[in-house]
Image (cartoon, rainbow, N blue to C red; front, side):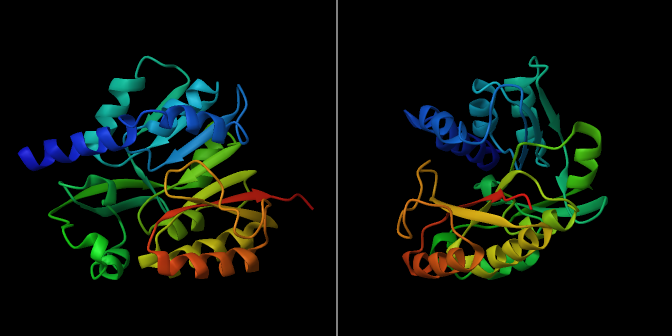
Length: 250
């Protein structure tokens, strides 16, 4: 119980306790969201992006399979009619799946056993254990779109399960992001392939939670080949981040 409580407290401190982060986040996401827009937060966790997006006037569907964090999201946003909290995961098809839970570090709880095996030898995960598991319901991005509409922006941060989530999407979205972790470099490349299959996209990279753009390839959006080269250069640095994609209509 103590481990679980400390894990929740750590997430709250990380995602809500750093001065200035919400301001930077609002400024950053204002390039993607306007008042009245719809946003999907897939892997909403402690809700820091939900908070920023609501401050921008966006409507938010927050997807989170961990019961502790679903309760937190409902505590934070339960009286806000513009926020819908869904206690489930997303994947390639509707059903159920086993979520590996790290009670001490719940931010790395995951549906992907392959991702767990991949990152287990990384120094950054040396103290991480997935010491519990729960069965969770699974839906798809297509199902969410059918019910709520097409989001102007969709964040997907689900610890190595991003490509599976994208397998449940059959149409391009205006803009989206997926997590990048150097220890699971190939998982991001799989996600990139799924995005490319949906339509023509351009990309930018943001280092971990900085809410700034990497400008090593210039201050511009790049194609998939340039993004792969950028990630190859960043991989030895060992720092995570997020890949952002914008759809370029035909």
